[in-house]
Length: 240
Image (tube, rainbow, N blue to C red; front, side, top):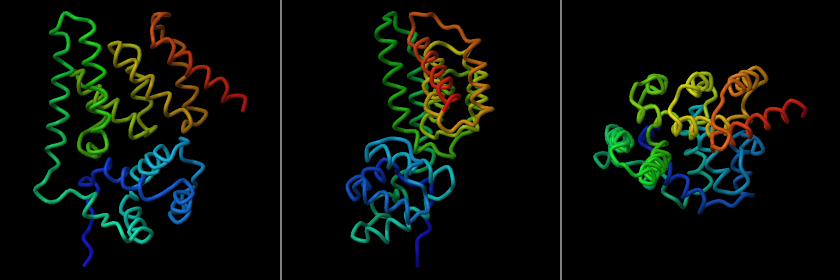
């Protein structure tokens, strides 16, 4: 009897690592063919990039179980369920949210220090940790609710999560936040928007352009550099 795989119980970092050891780029192309997925549509150039984007593609389309099934057939020597599915009692849905809330508290306490360098270090460390945690937060919180939260740590978590998920459905919500958000979150919104440009249709690209044209961060800031890069990319997309 086959064990039904619960998507929320899969450790996607382990899946990614297992796939990177089991496939080269040519074999990954064949895997995509078997899955009826256009390999060329997956962003990135390296093996790890392509595997990450393939996982995200399957995630967004509720095809993870199908992917695991194909992996079992193509690499039967690997016990995929034992290596990628958390065992009962080992971890549960609440643990990942507890970890997220711990990082949220850490982010929200950053202004308790007088050192600007320490604040920046905390912001970078927390955002990196949230990025690593993102796959395990899939379907475990309300993204729109957290984006609108008065809690800046929750908003950061939602933005970082979307940077991983790459779901353009939330781009309009991100655009409503970019002007009034605190600087570090503005930066992460811009990074996230930039990563989604290749998915955006003409109407959404026009909306991004309009919002960012009205957005005026300091010219010397990293945010201004990201704004400029996004607008430049949008301009080049118009003529290609």
